[in-house]
Image (cartoon, rainbow, N blue to C red):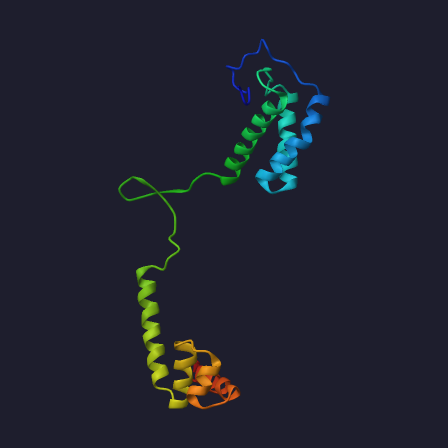
Length: 177
């Protein structure tokens, strides 16, 4: 079975040029196939059009070794691969000092100096929370640091929900100043 006879090694003596009516009869199938792969109806239309253009211009020749639908699907698959390759673009390589090539890919995790900076800010923030007046400090520790539910914090501190929100607001205001 020959998927897409675009190479020079394709047998040309059996070549049967499908007519426009035969191609149009396969259009709906090819369009659905392309839409499932691309998830983009307009792009699918373009790729199916490219298939028909390749067939009609003789760049792809039907050898009759399979059904027309199977052969057109093969041509379509090649067009889809070409599209994906074009959209991906060239891989960016960076030359290292030793002359070798390396992919320029950034790690999504923070770098060691960023982790150290975050830890330092956290220590400073915890020290500032410890320096708050006891009512504000206890509210921040229980509700924010220990992530206890509002009801539980209110019960532990013997305050109303409204008072808890006021304390948290005041604590945050002092921490930011």
